[in-house]
Image (cartoon, rainbow, N blue to C red; front, top):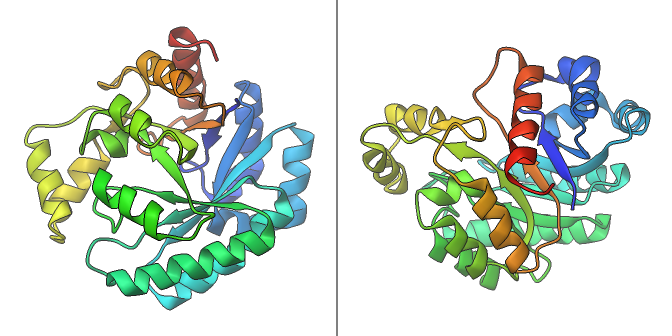
Length: 267
């Protein structure tokens, strides 16, 4: 089991000039990179960076599936991920209400077929305000989706819809990869959750949910308990810390988060 860090807080140029070096300096084992940044860097440059800093590429995360163009980009991204030796191709479902179930099912089939051809594992990211959001929706799409589709379990995105440890136990056989993210819910958090679940295009609710994400140890999630539960169900895959809101001094946050994880777990 390795611990990675996601590049969300770095733009494409900074991924090349700073991020990969930052992660190596902080003793991370791997990295997750968004497809757009992978495309901008190119295979040769990214491969060289990963080799120079001895980091594994855990996941290439495709963008939101809003259109047929997004679908085609994800399909092309599967081949790119495979060429780079990535373990996973991440699938971000469409935002709530963008497409119907039939269309989403067809899109999943297309992406998962491309992933199989590329030799990478497709993983669906349950996400607030998305087509795959709540536990019953996760279960449904894992059951009805292609056989090679597995789950990216995200601690903070699960928090709003159920107990995290219960979720790990429930989806133990489906979890292929884990996002470690903390959350500090604001006042009226449940109202914002309900608005997004209902498909309301509520900017205030989106902002309040996103800005509830925080550094590990500064929210309400007990990561010692998370790792104990992962261990109890036999999970031995990678985990990646995903920090979204700390735009200033990203190296400081990369170091702060791995330090907290090492302090409360045996990683």
